[in-house]
Image 1 (tube, rainbow, N blue to C red):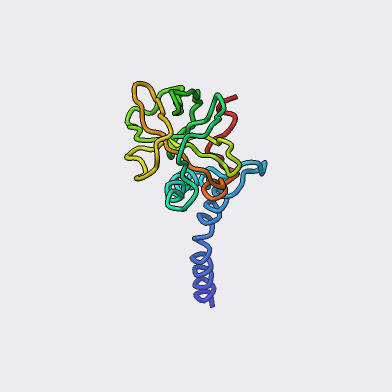
Image 2 (cartoon, helix red, strand yellow):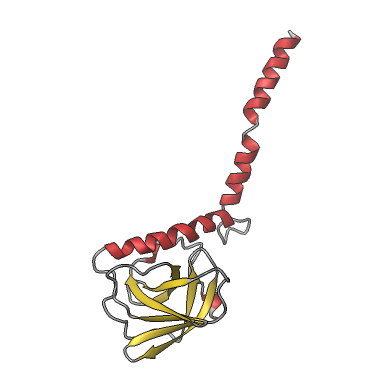
Length: 177
């Protein structure tokens, strides 16, 4: 009888073994205790998936900006893909926009192009800064200046819910305030 109880106890302990790590993972990916921000893991995933989804939006009709928008705010947030957000100053050069990033990028980052993101009403949300080559066929609407480097700026107008988790904004206003 003791062997049977010992066997049952070992079975129960073996079945319960995966639950603590699973519970920890669930808690790490859920909202924080104050319920105002998402867990760091969820925002981390959003910071990778959102910029990829943003590039995919260029294949949809009537979203790519064919010409520079008429008006932009004096300051915008520039977000490095899967990286930090920076304040930026906005200006014009002829008919094109110039977005000047304040601050230095990490040493190994080589910016390739920026994407100005507008919501459906035409309000500028910010600029996503990518490494690599620009989206083929997207018209240049300006430049992004980072230190001694200047890269092309293209633009898109879309519903931000397609690319961004509202609990983890790409372009937080707190960066430019």
